[in-house]
Image (cartoon, rainbow, N blue to C red):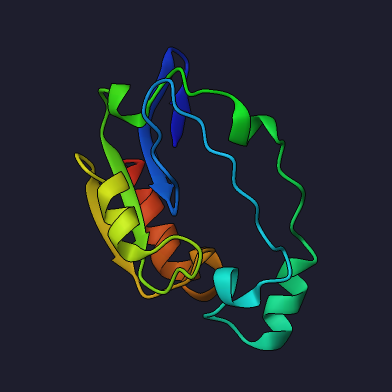
Length: 128
């Protein structure tokens, strides 16, 4: 996302559900699940990364959405993570409707296994 005085100019997303207005979702995540989140890195890297995870506010799951990605009228790029064990590719493709799509051969946190590729995509999405 590029932010400048006056608002958001561009947006990038990856591995996110795109909610519709008025919807909410309650989801539970097993933070011990290496396969869901870190199936594209070594076991050692996965364990270290799991230790970095923080809890997520329950409000983010239970509060109805009042502003949807489809409301944005700015360029948006969605990164489809083809090895994501948490959000299937078909779902990511649904969420990316109307956005420019970039694909990476990575899991849920693509910046671990595909750092250079992700930096390139974000720079391009930011217009840099």
